[in-house]
Image 1 (tube, helix red, strand yellow):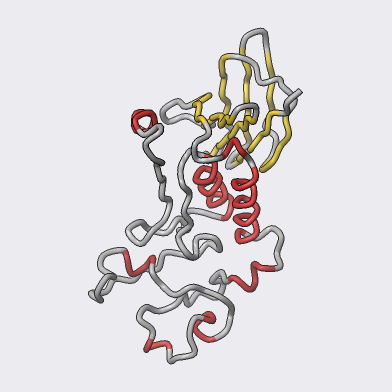
Image 2 (image 1 turned 60 degrees about the horizontal axis):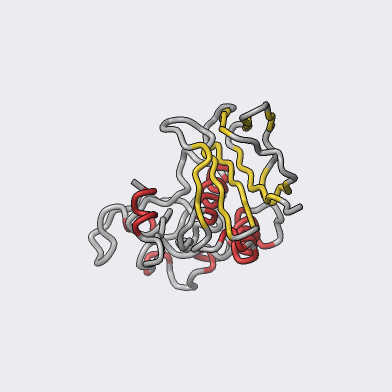
Length: 228
């Protein structure tokens, strides 16, 4: 379905693949950790689309179990529209008013993520997201109009491997969201010199006509093919 829409929109506009908004449950939930969120954002920022970050997803704000009849906050919307979490102060830095006067409550968890704590942590999701945005802006092969070629895309199997190209600039993205080691056997060779821009280098072995890529559980890699 995606490829069909991708091909039909060439030269007419851009596809957007939203991973978060108030009509979607937040990407951080009880079954996910930071590594899961990193994989989701890698996908969002390396596919040929216009990436959006729903406020709070850059620090891993949680979907709260709130249902209310307030205007605009029906269904699951309320739990995804809670106030931005800036620091550990009153109402997590969003407002100095009494908590009961807030339109929606803040996350009351002791470990509720906030911007201030993640600012100076180089390994935080916030700084990971900043680096990813910087990469997206810097690499011509990640431009919205750069070409997209699936390398390994098999239903119910991982890793998902694809290439983005813009003239001589080429980037290969390898995503394995599974909780187990995953292997892809692809036609052709991936033996050009390359640089790891993000993530960890998978085990890559080549034979006469194909390449085997073996990925650790819950891993991601962004490779830049070097021009000789």
